[in-house]
Length: 65
Image: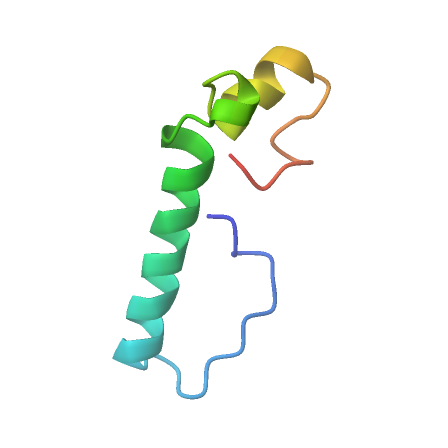
């Protein structure tokens, strides 16, 4: 998950509204970076573009994996 190492402040642990919002944002980011092709990237997803043109960037350096 992209946010597992970031400090995300939740008002109440297990707050269903905040957990749903976080889950929705993570899913949207995954769709944007790993599923949706981008015209500006020659119709590749950002993750595909990085793999193709910048293979030196590993999963440890990029939040797109």
